[in-house]
Length: 83
Image (cartoon, rainbow, N blue to C red; front, side, top):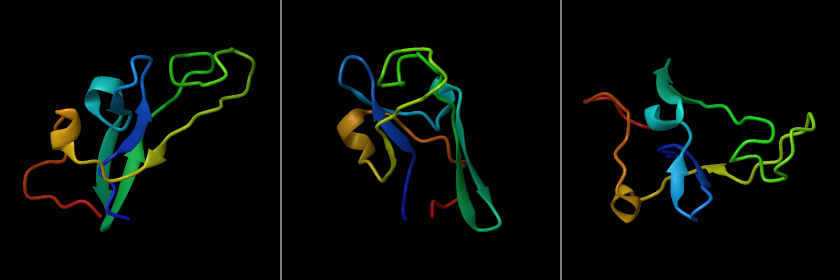
C-alpha cells in the first residue's frame, strides 16, 4: 500500500505517526512486508471516545503521508524500502 506509518491526529490537530519511536511504535520490514507496530490506550489521547471503558475507538489509517508536510522523519533503516 506504500504506507509510511499509521497516522492519526493528536489533540492539536497535528498528524502523527503512531508506528514511530516518538510514540512507542515501530515499522518493521519482515519477509518483504511492512508491519506497523503501535498501541492505543483505552481512554488515552488517541482513543476518540475518551473513556477507559474497555472499548477503543480510533480514527487513523495506514497511509503514505508526505513527510515534508508534517516535518517528521521515518524510522526505516537506511537502504530499506517501504512497501
